[in-house]
Image (cartoon, rainbow, N blue to C red; front, side, top):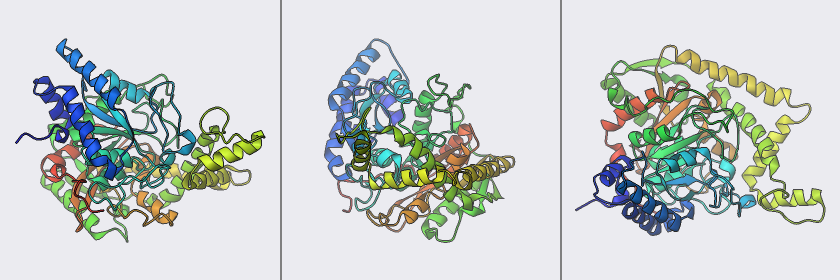
Length: 491
């Protein structure tokens, strides 16, 4: 029996279309049918664009008949709803942007479109990407395709769930403190966070400008490498975008890990970690060693300071970035009589509880008399965290760790305890503070069948090393071949 088209990897789909086995229209329709079949249960998409997708697919098929062969020609993908898309609603999971239609498209999305990508729609997100579970979306909670009573991770939970439910071939996400890697781990897919500056953020609606990075969620490491290849590179519209050559990320995937030095940080195997997570990650490390990698114990001594540093820096930047939503220029307006009252009412009604919490924390940290004690001190300690990684990468090529302390938790389980929720990011936020790259690759499951991710961390612009290690692990294990069945998952 022929496999349904929606089950293909991105590379298999490209091969099939090039061989004439099926068209982009047929592939796109198969994925739209899949979305219709499973997304009522999963809630991965905020907006589906079937007419636009089929039109783009038809254009891709016509271009292929005329000899075109762009890297993603005819490939259906999903886009996290914090990336601007001209003519398609972009809400950031917030009521304050409920009817916002951007007048332009984000550079990363533009590059995918120029490479032939077909856009299926926009995926759900924690409001303004602030969250670890996608429960903070103003519209609905996305559910984990492996168990519909559990969260998919966040904030790119819609993208992670869409890939895991095989309702897209790949998806863009964003990662400010783990928001690509956490959904990848919870949903059993690949999640790649590039180095700061490697991918243009022009058109990404900002949360924390010194932390945000656009990443990709995909079925395989090879697929993630291809999407990064298309997106990466300098963009004059983003002053933080690096004007450096982009390597061929797929060229070194098959080099294996013989002689690769893999660091194991003692600070990432902490008290309270779920035993099955620790066991799965340590088994994965042993597997890398069997493949020829050299395992090196390391220390990252300032790790314990990362959580307070992150939640000072991120909230301060959020306070500044979200001040633009004033009920005057764009977005929701309460229509109050006075400017001050309209400002207060528009933001009060338009923002959800978690966004308000982070704005208040950030405003406090930046306020007169507290700036030096909180924000400035956090930036100083951030430098120490960055130096920890720089020192470690003098002796190792990549670092291996868990992605999260636990597997996916139940919806509502941590909603009333923000600190417990924030602790889910303890192994991921350090990478954003240091501006380095990381990838999550499936490496096991717990006794409830919930996926576990292995995090591989590289130095700044070290994507080639982590992709190489992740691909070697993936291709010699079978975790990436196991898929959720949301149509029969527990509720």
